[in-house]
Image 1: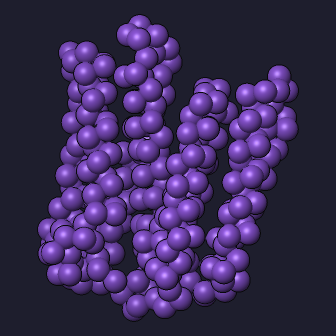
Image 2: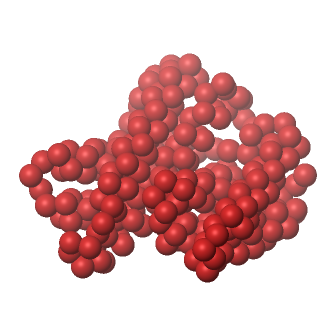
Length: 257
């Protein structure tokens, strides 16, 4: 299995996801929609599994490989949210976001690699990266929900506030878990838990941003005002994930592979 086959798995998954989401909207019986969405998830996961087997290591090293996982996880989060709260629109948005990441990977296939440097050959590699990407997916879904809540007329947010808080709480837990595993890994590989390199600085800023929202949720701050923090925090997250590598100081980072 190689990246040349990705287009077939991706196209098949997207077709299943779009048709499944459409079926959720049009059919009173959600069975077909659920089957199609689940089928797309399994197909996409199958590609990751086959690619993993062919590379002899998890496809988690490059930016393109992390986008691959994000494309799957954002749909998983959207689907889990639909199953729990029946928000069809969030399922639809999740599929659209996944499509964007799939298209980027199709347009930039040169960013993938089969080599794994010694520093990445650690038991912490897989859990550290996958937990982070799962957290990013949950924060992305929370951001979509927050923007929808802000767009709606005040008083008509319904259960969106509870949904947003649940996504942020769980996503923040995964975010901190990813940071802790990364710190342990760094200690084993480089001798320090934390060195304040560019990636770590922005990871701290991201975590602090979401912590501000969590504190605001329990303070006497109007909920709609507190929600404004979420899109800003997500911008910090995107800089941490995708933007740091474009900074001049990024070459000094231990996260530059």
